[in-house]
Length: 273
Image (cartoon, rainbow, N blue to C red):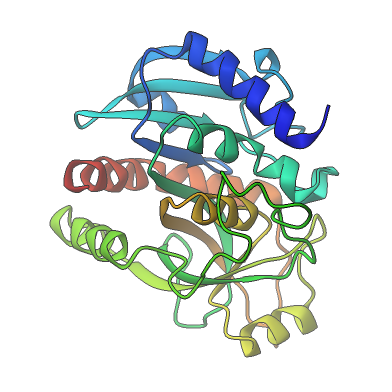
């Protein structure tokens, strides 16, 4: 069975069980999975029950597809994601987004935890993505294009919807959430964290924050014609000339501490979309 057939089989399965067609997808990243418990859930489908869905091997990522309501919107929440460093291809990483795009979702909100590169940033900030660099070395659109899914050469002049960026920044102001900024995200393969020299180089490339996720899903969402908003919790900021050890436990701790504010921000954004 090829990739297209796998996607279509999963679409049929989810469609048979889903209580509605989702308007909006919210993908939860490292340390941010508890947000799923705050929505008015109507149906929870474990990833293990979904045909051809990858399985997360990262302990901080639960594996559930949750249909529910937020701010009057029909949403589907991806509680946990997959990563290139787990051994998956970028096509497999983006498999859930491809499936949900074919169920009618028009907007994607992606969240993740990222390391700060911009020296003006602070740990605990929320960065609204305005652009990205894909340094994975692989693109999920590589291979035969399915014309019904999107164009062979999709335009990426505006990978993140300007209206959604403005809505996110305005919502942060309305909710009085401090340290919400915008910037450029760079995705690297991982799982090893950046060296001081790599940190310096990534800064020079124009990146404000670095992570190991999200870009494959964003590429597929844009290919499918979806509007995308990206939100990164900045877990730490490292100076390449005075480098400090980066521990996963600290990244998760910072992301969890910021979860209530990110939850408040997402709910406000959903109200305004």
